[in-house]
Image (cartoon, rainbow, N blue to C red; front, top):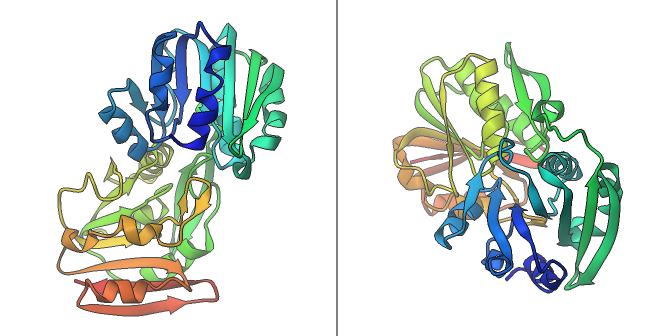
Amino acid sequence: MFAVSQIIARNLHRRPGGGSVLWINPEKDDGWRALESSCLSVKLFTQDFTRYTYLQQTGAEVEFAAFPSLDEDKFDWIIVNLPRQKALLAMMLECTSALLANDGVLWLAGENQAGIKSADRLLKLHYGQVRKVDNARHCGLYEASTPLGQNTFNPMTYRQQWELTCADSSIVVLSYPGVFANGRLDEGTALLLDVLSGIKLEGDVLDFACGAGVIGACIATHNTNARVTLLDSSALALRASTETLTANHINGQVIASDGLSEVNQSYDAVVSNPPIHAGVKTDNHLGMRLLESIQKHIRPGGMLILVANIHLPYEKWLSERFKKVTNLAANENFKVIMAIN
């Protein structure tokens, strides 16, 4: 088991009668099984499609969505794995205060390097009683009770809306905490969009790791003959992308996938700002692993256009798979590369 699951497991004796349990964003392991013997019901919720498919395979009752279903009975015990972003934690803590029974208990567990040591400050904004339960395996565990909220949660309170100029047009972008570059245009995507403004795209186009849907929406706005598909493993990103497409009156498909696991067709072009974070850790080769089989999903003569950190060896990796690889643009931090199949 992952360390966070281990610190939860070693403290289960503190909750011998767990009642109904909701575990939010558990790790990709079977730590949830330890709850079954002492709890009336165990439900898992995840915003990550990779974890969702794994947990389904273990036999868990698990929901994949941007937010837990709010129309169910309240839970006696909610466990939350600490997210990397503080804004996402604040949003999810408000959500839990609407899901927890009046006499219920919340556990928040996470790694020290993810910020668990300072998480009690946010907990105290949402719960009247907060105490530290354990500290082990470079992780911490907090317990909270007495929700301070109004027993309601409105995700729209946390949604950010902003406008972005793509070439000579303006699009509306909608996003949530936890979505990459929430509320702003990051430097890498800005360079990629500048390059894309001079490239004509037609046919089926995949926006891989779409985030809030910025790239896909810009492509559809300036390429009327392009049919866009937006893909991500994050339920929050998929919700944001769907809302971005709707706000700009764009017809497009939005799909959840662990890398390319759910992709069953080929495309004329794939465009991406691939991720470099795996949980709280930076993994400079994560994007290459996720795109490992991308070549077989690009039609002959089709292209892959991506932006990457300037120091990453994408050119060598792509040259082993594609007929032609070209650097289209670069600045001090990022480069845009095109590979022709």
